[in-house]
Image (cartoon, rainbow, N blue to C red; front, side, top):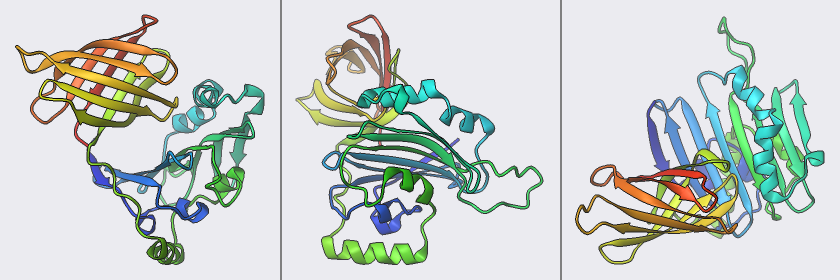
Length: 285
């Protein structure tokens, strides 16, 4: 498996039509990643100001397995996302559409709407093993008024972008200006936190505080939490040290880190204030 970051993109450069259902704004941040020589597209749209998060992963030459579809229908997995926005289980609604094949869960508490679902966007191929399984996975959170259509309608209308939609987006953002480029001080991270997140990806914003100390801010999309951290380099080794985190939900954690090599980032291990294991890697974006 190979991952290639394509960096930020403008609304008219997207593979998908999500921007056509969002109010025009320069506050959106975007990130695009291609996997396996471009056979998988992943795009993320996020705006802290407008309280929206959308991530879309599309297999453009094949489709997801049945297990991916089952995962999107799993209420225990969905609960990890919904509880972060105080959405009770009696608000969960199952998505189960035949055409186009769409399966998952959506829930709202009136203030926030969250959804996890898979959907088939490509037309059926002539392959012998073609079963019409979904080729696109979407995770969606909206707590603002960025959407121009109801969230339930977005689930049905999200698709590959058409040339007409691309042209219209180019006109719209020519008038209001381009999106703000991604912060160059942000790098990718992956964190596993017992009982909270498993191999969850996100971004870290680094701020150097002299040669030995770096402060950073970690944002985890699911569950939603922000943690302020400090990494201190050991004076003797220069390739290891200590770290600590203080998070928005009052969790704290600390431990040690080890360098992955020059310019490659670091891996940290430790525990939180409840004795739960925490492990993360910070690398180049």
